[in-house]
Length: 486
Image (cartoon, rainbow, N blue to C red; front, side):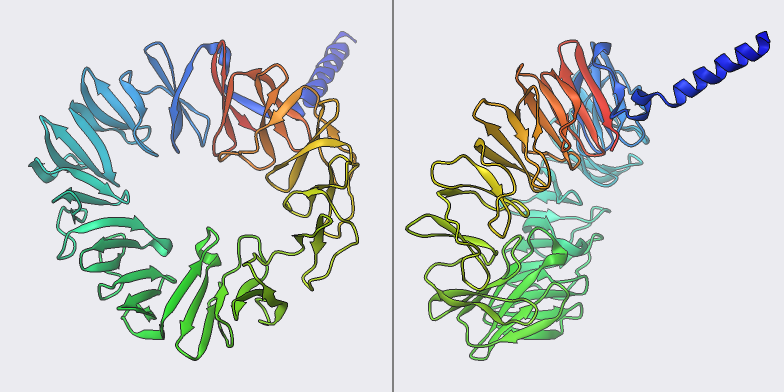
C-alpha cells in the first residue's frame, strides 16, 4: 500500500511537471541572466560577446552554447571574427578556427576569406590563413574591396585590385569595386566598368561605359550613349536603346527594366524575363514599391497601365506624376476621398485628415471626430475614438484614446488595451516579425507580441533585437541574452 502511494505521488509529480503551463507556454529562453553581472560588448553573426571584469564570455547565436574565449578577446572585428589584444599588439580569433592571427602585430584586419592585412611599424603585409606571406611588407595601404578582394592603394583615388594569390587583376587600377546581384562584382576605372566573378575573372569580355547585371548570364551594357543586353560572350541580345531605367524594389528577382527604342516604342522587361513593347507614350515608369500598376506619361500628362495586359486603367490626364497604387487618396475642396482604379470615388465619404494605407487599412477622421481605421472600400473597421493613430510594420496600428490609453487596433475584432505601455517602437531593427520593443509608463523597455502579450516585461533600460530571434537586454544588475520562442 505504501509502494502504491509513493508510485501515485511520483505519477502526480510527473504529470504536474508535464502539464506545467509556465513551461509549456514559455515565451523566452534565457541564455544569460542579467543577474549574472555580465556587460554586453558587441555581436556578429557568430556570437554575442559579454564581459565581467576581465572575463569575456561568448554565446553562440546558432546553438546558445557558452564559449570561453581567450582573456585577451576585445571586440567584434567583422561579421565572423573577433579582435585579440595582448598589451598593445593585435590579432584575430574565431570560435571554431581559434586564433587565426596571433596578437603580435600593431594592426590586423580580415581583408577577404582567409586573407588578413597585418601592420608592423607602419608597414603593411597580406598573409593567408596558414600564415604565409601573400604580399610582402610595404608602405602602400592594403584595404578590402567589397570584402572579397585585396586592394593596394596606388594613389588617392586609384587602387590595384589583386586576386587571392596577390596577383594583379586587370590592366588598370580601379577607383571603386562593389558587390552586385547574381554574385558579380563591378569595378570602375578610368577606362570604364566591368563585371568580375568571385575568383577575379571577367564575367563579360569587355570594359564598358557602364554595366549592370541582368541575370547570371546576361548584362545591360552602355556603349557611348546606347544600351544593349548582351550574353557572357558579349553578343547583343536586345537593343540598342537610347535610354534605360530599372527598378528592383530592393530585390534583384523583382526587377523591371524600361528600355527606349528610337522612334519605335518602349520595351518593358518584366521580372520573369519576358518582354512587351508599348507605343505612343513619352515615358513609362516601373511600378513603385507596393504598386500594382505602371505609371505612364503621354503628352506631358500622367496615367496608369496594367502590367499584365498593358492596358490603360487610368487615362493620362493628371498634371503631376503619381504612384499607381489604388485605392488612393485624392484631395478635394471638401476634404479627402478614396479613388478607385477607374478614377471614381470608392464611397461618398469625405475625410478631414487621412494617413497612408498600411496593408489593407488606413487611419482617417471625418469633421471634428476622432481617428479610426477604414478599409479599402472606405468603410470604418474600428470605432472613431482615438486622438492619434500610428502605424507599425506588418499592417498593424496603435491608437491612443482621449484618456491616454494605448490600444493595438484590431480591424477584425475588439481593440486590445495595452496596459502599462506608453509607446511602441515601430523599428524592428532586424528582429523577428510580430514582435516590437515598447516603452512602459515607467520609462523602461519591454518586448510585445502583436497579440498584445508582453513577452518581456518593461524592466530594462534597453533592448536590442538580433537575428535568430535573440534579444539583448540591459538592466541595472547586468546585461542578459535570451531567445524568443517563436
